[in-house]
Each structure stands twice: as C-alpha cells, then as structure tokens.
Length: 541
Image 1 (cartoon, helix red, strand yellow):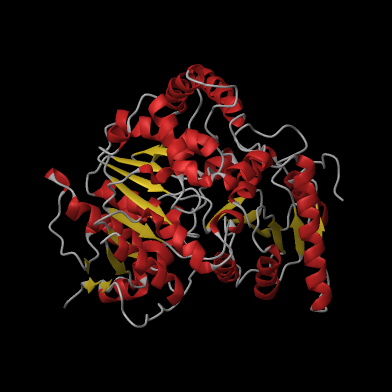
Image 2 (cartoon, rainbow, N blue to C red):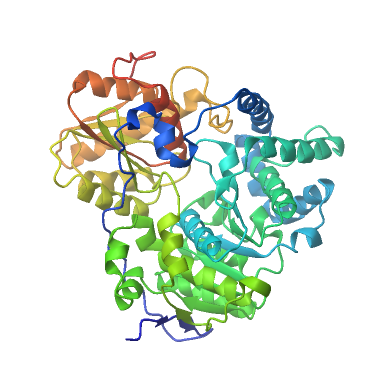
C-alpha cells in the first residue's frame, strides 16, 4: 500500500487558490495521575520533567538566577517605549545588529547556525516544539528559542528539549548584559527585553554547538529581531488572524505580508494557512525571493493514509492542528543538511517514519490543551488567545467534560489589542459555565514572581482591564438573555478561594483557564501554594 503523501507546491502566479479544510478537533491526551501525585506541586505536574529535590547548590543558583531576572525586568518595554518602537520599527533589524555586535558576535557568526524559522499567529510555538522533538529522534542536537515563557524565563532557550539550566542562563546573561552595559553610548542605550533574550539565545546556541536551531518569531516576522538572519533555508508559516494590529496592520493581508517577511532567497517555505487572500500574499513574497512554497495537508489525511489514525486520535490537539507542518519542516531540514543527519527524502514527500512518531509522542509543550488533576479539580490549561484558537479550545474542553457532572468554571483574561468581545462570544456560545472568573495576570496580592512581572501594565491597569472584560461579558449575557455568572476578581488566588467557598472540597470541579499564556503562568504559580482551606487576599470586586 502506498502510504506516502505528496505536498502540493504552490506556483507563484496561479489564478485562484483552493482553501484548506479546517481540521477536526479531538480530545487531547492528558497526564495520567499517579497514585502518589499529591506529593507533587502543581507546577511539577504541569512540567513532569521537573520532579526533583533541590540541593543547596540549586538554591544558590536559583538566587543568582532570580537576581538576573530582576535586572532583566528593567529592559522590558513599558507603554512609552512600545509606542517608540512602533514609530521607529523600520530600524529594528539595524538596532538588533548593533547590539549583537556589541555583545561580541558578528552576523556571520550567527549565520553559521542552521536555522528553521517559524512565523504565524497561532500554533507557531507548538509547531516548533514538534519539529524540534522530531529532529532529536533523528539524532540532531537541537536549540529551540520560543516566547513567551509559561512560568520561568529560561524556558525560552532550550537545548535538546530542556530549558537552559539556570546556572547556564546566569552565565550567558551576565556575559551579554555586562558587555552591553559597558558599551553604552547613553543611559538608555540597551536592547528591549525580547531583543536581549534573542541575543542571549544566539550566544547559547553557538556555545552549545547545536546542529539545528528552531527559531520562533516574536511578533510579525518582517521586522522581528529574529529576522536578522539572511540565509535561512527552511521556513514555516502557521495559521493567521488579526493580532498586534498597531504594529502589524489592520487587515489580514497586512498581517500575512509581515509574517511572510521571514522568507529568504531560495528558501523552502511550508504553510497550512487557509485564507486565499493570505496565501496570495505569501505566494507573491515567495516569488519575489525565488523561494519555493508548499501547502501542507491536514494531519488526518496523512495519518489515515499511513493507517495510523488511532495514533493521531491519542495525541494532543496541537498535533492534529500543526503536526503535518512540523513533519514537513523537519524533513526539509534533514534533506538540506549535510553529513550524518542528511536524509535523501524527495522534496514534496511526507511519510510517518518511526522517528516522526516517536518525536510526536515525546514532544512536551505544556499549557496547550493540557489537563492536570489537582486538589480535586480537573484543570484544563490552554493559552488560546485568538478567535480560531478559542474555538479549538472550546471544542477540546467540551469533549473533555462531555461525560462529567462536575461544576464547570471558566478563568479568563486577555491583554493586548485583541477583540476580546469576539473571544467571549465564542466561549459563551460554545460552553456552559456555572461560574466565570475574570482576573488579571496576578497570582496573588503579594509581589509577583520576577519571571511573571509585567512592566507594560501596572497591577491597577491589569485589574481595570479585567473589569472591562467582565463588563463586556455582562453585555453579552444581556443581549442573549442569559444569566450572568461572571465576576471580576483581584487575583487568581481570590478566584480559586471563591470557587471553594461555593463548591466544598469534596466536589470535583472542571476548570478551564484560557485567554493568555501569561494568565496560565500566574495560575500555575498560584496553584503551587493553593490549598483547600485558603483564604482570600484582599477580596474581589
């Protein structure tokens, strides 16, 4: 039986485009609860690879790491500097190059790295995680740069799938920070948060002698500081929707133009973008660079042809959405690599090898369609933040709770310029909740972990934002003649305390936390300290 599938190469100037069918969504696999799981904190259950006893040396390294993160916060853009970056965004790549060279690296040094570059609105992180995991199964030593982090900043830089050790993070932080500080031309002459970490990542990947770097774009693509590389041969573009409109543009075609800015001359570009107008823009940009563009099929088609639909059904939902794109990117890098890792795969060909299946099954991407059982709660974590991804999240949550009689509770927040009301409409129409909690990205009333602190928004501004979201929910309830079960809480802690006041400890709860990766991080940290007898900090509004 022929169990291979060919990719459709997109010509540069066809008259029309055939839109891809939206993927179906199934229930994800979740972490199986262990008999002794309650000895673990919530974060240890989320990050299953972090279950270990800390030594005194670990404690010292943790203290040094936290001190560096406190300094890193000073680089994080506030509202004024964000506006400045919008006004001067054409200089982003030149500014990145200036700081890169000041840190001790040339662009030629960085371009010796072999890179897979991925842009998109939704799914680029999980696509990168799957791609990286597959390549490790082929024997590659991998580097992986992603954003944002879920709990700890060092998650953004990974070697062979593991977050950079905090001692190593401290070493490279000090190396880069001190060089940049020493070379300042004026007091504010330092890179912003993301640009600084990108430069640190390049230092790490060069020092660690990785075979391949899977590089996730921060915002957009064309002007993103990861886009200083001129010789990337493999690139991917995930699904697109409106985001960061103040920076990227107000139309989906403008968004597509920015994302396609990562395409380099002669590159192979893979996408599962569905909108014809977006594909047209991507095709035009690929033609300008004499790059080859390939449309990736749905995962169901590939796995069905290989008679492995059972495997796909057992996977997390992000595999169904982004698995084929990850496989295509991994195969393209393997065929273009030289030496021991080279594979003579045909250009427009996909197949489920053992390495691919193992890579997919071993991929670890917490906070995306993830179910964790903790303190008599089934906690569903998903960082969905666009209308499309919220729909996927709701489908997953409905199927996960289909046979459940537990009270259903939503914990939600969304920052940025996303149309929050559209997200709320999907949540209200797709799921039935007994309790709805709108919260800022604040774990509790005490000072936030330095890895979670946002200088862009004060605590007060975050609470005002959560209050506005609660008002929007009220308006939707009134318009649809539904009972409003929503309320704004000052912290995530206060929301969970109220849950347990309303539903005693013996009642199991289904909880969905979504809308923002930053919210997930705050919730994970909070739940490490939460217990069934916890009290509210300073109340709810």
